[in-house]
Length: 196
View 1 (cartoon, helix red, strand yellow):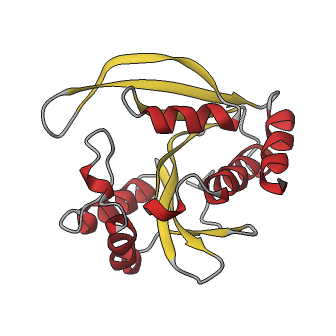
View 2 (view 1 turned 180 degrees about the vertical axis):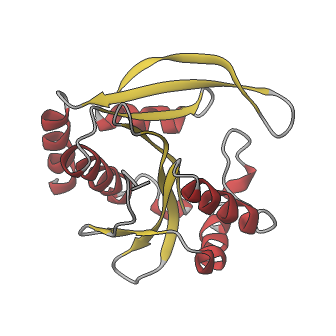
View 3 (view 1 turned 30 degrees about the vertical axis):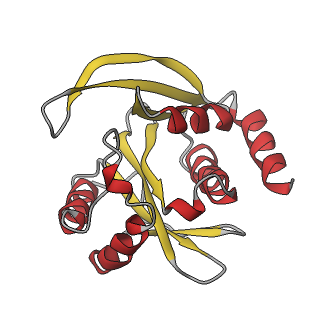
């Protein structure tokens, strides 16, 4: 069966998204060490001990056609600084989710996230003809929720007790989306924010 979302390189001014490979594992470990991001209890960022499993799981999702994972490479020095992916791919309804997004601490709240989202959304709406793109985050991840709202996404709702966490607790998941009719205005706003 032909893939709806195929491997692609998405290049911007500040960052480039490249398909994830097993060989990126060590670079992702180094990126996550900046801020010890795995210690944030409400995220799924890999620790040095879990990075190989994290990458293997992402590549397995790709093989099952449920995700297209990327590394985020900063253009200035070519360093890998994080990861993101299209996931929960619903080809029938042309509805991917953008998730599993994280960046080394020094790149958070920079133009990188805005540009990466612009690259992914442009690809989804203009090449894949998506009718909606979803974003999901943990209820307690206030930083992520604010960042998603700044993109122009609207909150669809909260899935209570949506997932069992590794520690046995339950995750309430906040679901946001941008629909195709909103995309032109969202795109204009993201470009404006990058040019400021």
